[in-house]
Image 1 (spheres, helix red, strand yellow):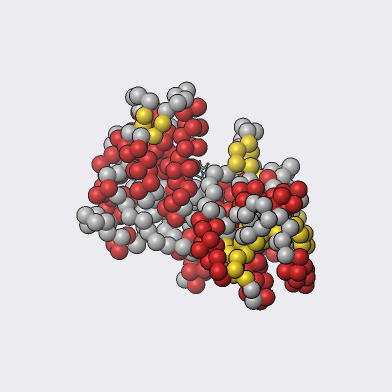
Image 2: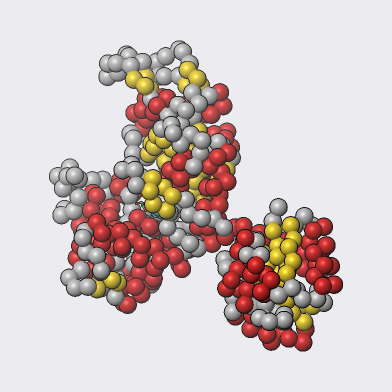
Length: 465
Ligand SMILES: Nc1ncnc2c1ncn2[C@@H]1O[C@H](COP(=O)(O)OP(=O)(O)OP(=O)(O)O)[C@@H](O)[C@H]1O
């Protein structure tokens, strides 16, 4: 039950308000002054409703004491100016007395809902080396993501994570696994786009000896390896139709059959899938099985693109910069004002991954104590890929858009041109990893893009480490 603290010196109003709120199933406590309220510890409530004028300190004194709990200020019509003043001081809202009951109840419900959405604490994620770090980002959209993770992780349902490349889909999958009751069992991650189509079925489901040419021994698939734990299928939109049919069977029957085998085996696997593509649209065009889409789409988590998390960019940059400085033993490096402006203005087509890479690069290149725009190596404003407005479900595989003809920059350079020029210009002296890093996309996306644009990797190109 949500807890509300009413701070009001007039006993009649206080008890009327208490009754009203209790009728709507809130647990209500009362205080007659800021001093009395302080004794009740306002921070343990979900909402504080306080009169502005109270004996002793004004109700606005509670804003700081209750933080992060929101404070709704009650005021009379006569003191509307001070009501507005209280908003400036950080009150979440005000309501004028005498108030309409329905209006008050509606305001309280709205504020509590907003508060519960904001309460998303970033989950801690343990990496392969065993060290634990919280996800970074504090904007509303990320708080909603954190709340979703917290609620969804223990539910053991299939989850579909949607978002552009580099937005943290794999991190979310890890958080879901680590907060689930399967945390002690394996998390098996498979990137469906990185495995050749001809191999993916046997990788996932295993095969019997002699099932196909080259199958010289029987082999257990990754789905079976995830038995008891979680299977994370990244880029599930790339899964061939035959493999989709087998996967559906795993989800529907909890059964797996190796290629070339007539026997089935029971498996208990939680599936988490991720995609940057619109699976709904793919299933309409027949590229993705509709029944599998419905099975996957039990619970969705949508990750915002970094450019939509504007207030987060610099805060994330500071944390990632600190980490990069530690890694390279360059503690104390700071971003110059111009570099901060650049980070703020850049559209981040490769999202957090691209930001991470730019900062890493800058830590290596910076000469004094300050990082300057040149050290970040971001594309100059005129040739920058423009942000592609898209919901995660419709988003192209990263902000270097698929239908790029519509995305012209101010100078008339399309994102496709930008990508193509960049690759053609640098591929002779850069490895695939370096190219991908510079473009702020994953190697997998670089490969996909090369295929699509008809600029496959040259045979004599620098070999990727
Ligand atoms: N909120 C975040 N906090 C900290 N690091 C993040 C966050 N989001 C992304 N990253 C970092 O950005 C990089 C990319 O994240 P991740 O691999 O999870 O993205 P992705 O959406 O799965 O990308 P892709 O689709 O290209 O595989 C990783 O190094 C990850 O640690």
